[in-house]
Amino acid sequence: MNMTRKCYVVSGDKETPAKFYGVFQVAKVVGESPLIGGHSAGQVMEPVAVVEYNGQLHKAYLDQVHFEDVEARDETRD
Image 1 (cartoon, rainbow, N blue to C red):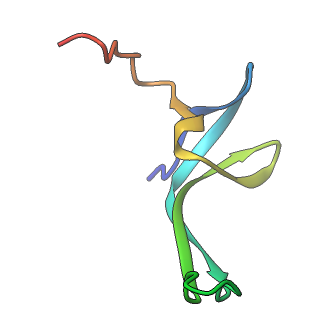
Image 2 (cartoon, rainbow, N blue to C red):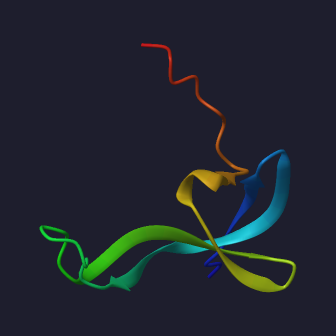
């Protein structure tokens, strides 16, 4: 069973062929703000795509991943 999907990772004008493995969540710990009334300590989380290119796994923002098997849609039409 194939667990990857062909895609391109877009960065600026460059499109890199890649394999898409899935969407995962990255969590980062943030400390308490030193300012009065600032935020408390906790976590900031964001989804990322895990892709493989050049023989390595990489994180990519979701809007940087474009799939080969999907036609582009015009979102401005009703």
